[in-house]
Amino acid sequence: MIGTRIHGTILGLMAGLPSMCLVIDSRTYELCEQMSIPYINCMEKPIKFHTKDELLEIFLNNFDAAKLDGLKEVIYRNKKKYLIS
Image (tube, rainbow, N blue to C red; front, side, top):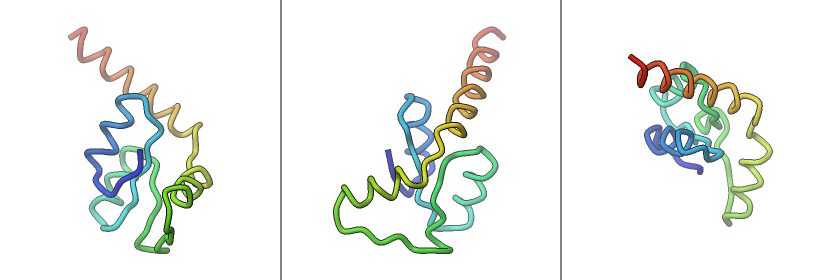
């Protein structure tokens, strides 16, 4: 899942989908940084693509699966703690 909205990216991650946010403003950048959400900072270097295959290639070149696995573990622990309490 790829998008510019932080909420959509979070929903994708919670559903277990590889997801990445295209950061277009400082608020989204800060949220992605604080929550370890995979992102591409389009403010520093705009990305250019014309097809979904080109966008997929950009995604795959910038996606860090290990970072996502760590985030999924944090989400799992937090959900478990919330449900038990």
